[in-house]
Length: 190
Image 1 (cartoon, one colour):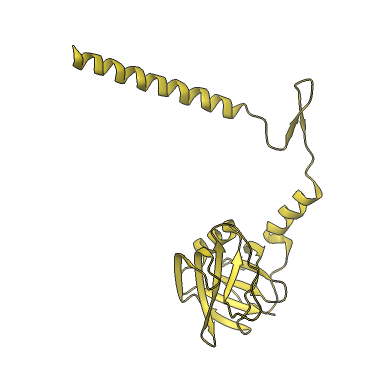
Image 2: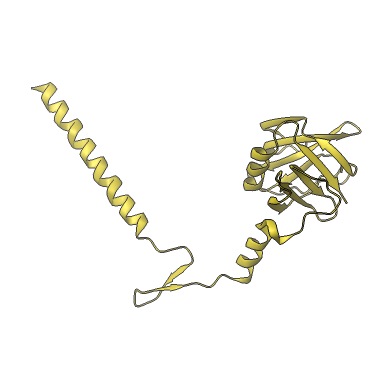
């Protein structure tokens, strides 16, 4: 009898989990869109995107900013020192993604480089835990590369301290990690 009771309890538990999963799915499927407001009468009103929402979308859009002239051809990462911006450019010379970055205190000279090493996670020269590190250059013993702070913070580097981490958001860091494999061309422009 104990074996049979155990089987019944297991079957009932499994059935309960299925019911909870179905109810959870139905609830999430019927939830209001995050850009939807619920009126006092219970009806839904679509919220117009704010200026900030539009600017944020435009800034992330590859078409938002033209790839710098003179940055080469083919698949590459383009880093503009003056614009503090990166483009991930496909083999067809079209931007797959572009975004702003926070520069390091030591900048690489204008020129063409290759990704030399990568690390999933390390501690940055500023003591911050970073991830998706893509290194491509070195200047006077300072290694330069792209990375994202695990806590999502932007650096506030001490100009007296030599750091080579060009910081990205975590989402942008993941995109860089997926795009810039070992040997990928990195072009630095003004």
